[in-house]
Image (cartoon, rainbow, N blue to C red; front, side, top):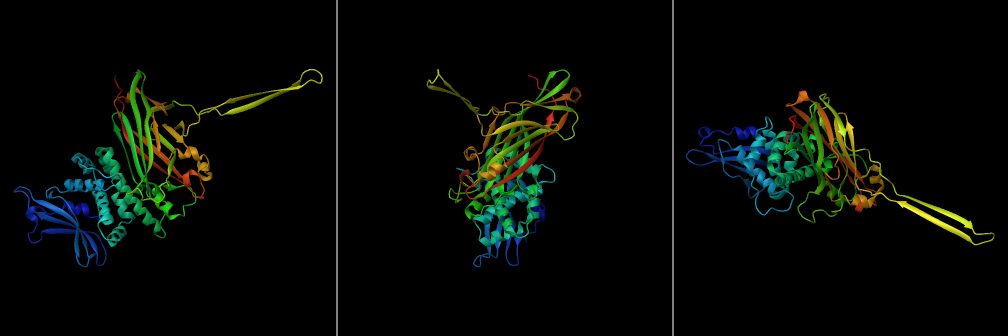
Length: 481
């Protein structure tokens, strides 16, 4: 499969294609007597253009039908077959995602394909990733079990590594795709990775943890005054921080088929309020973190309550490490110093006259403070500003404390600007005006599983975390109102 891109782009032109050889084949996966093949058939087109049709075949799996065709593409121009083939594959991968069914097939714009193919040196990996997704769904739905076994035996760590070596191309594709199709594509890919991780766990002597570049995809873009970072990772691929693993097979299955999906939207502005310096302002627009179940049917998971929940989020933003052109950050929120409920009782005793009746008086005062589920703080990390939110710590996870507070987070986390209204600012010298500089946006998320309904009755709990860092461009051109 490593030769897929070169094989596809080096198909002979119409004049060079021998009439005695109407088709070309490439082995995608194979054993001694069984194989999965990709075939290219030259077909008649118009007078000015020759077409080619691609198909995937199973060879040697069916005694009665030794060459079974699993899939056929739409005819593609032989002069440039890659874009239409990718478009066809992606539309089917999105349709097959483990999400609610679509009323009609998705219609993708060609610019989403061209944006990915325009990234230098990453088109082969992107094609391989998309093709693996489509081949996985073919083996999962339309092929015998031996075909799926053969595919996963071929899909070792180096093969997956080379397919996921398209970070920039995948990011450009997802950004051009739009949120709806992006979500479905990433859940389709996440389902493939989840199954691969299950099989990887069953293999003896597998190294832990999983290399970071194999854990999923993330990207950041500058869109309409917002820096947007999006990250996707199957929960089993996240780094495990401790706790006894679940022994119940239904719970283990449920926990193995979950994906963390995170979106961070930061609003920024470059201002010139003082002639002495440029002011860079940043505030949180939205932080959204959800753990979704990867499954087709409502009864796919025996125990749907077995789910990780986000318990801690850390967002970091600032110039490149070592930047000396800025002063800051200047934080807009003080360290939290919440009031606690205090109750006091005073009692006074006394007698009236000699031998009189005893009198008693009691006074009680009480003060209460509002308690939120999430506690948000600001801090500085070098020249970067940090927003950090905490729902609970490791002791809460291990001890099953605050079950009611933790249970309310099972729907995920949504933080809007009203929750973290205070911004962070930096100052840069006037000599930087007009320059384009690189800034970093980082995200680290902890998720935890607390056992049954948030109360650790079974003794099973765990915490996992994952971290991403992306780069965005910042033009130091002051905004003019």
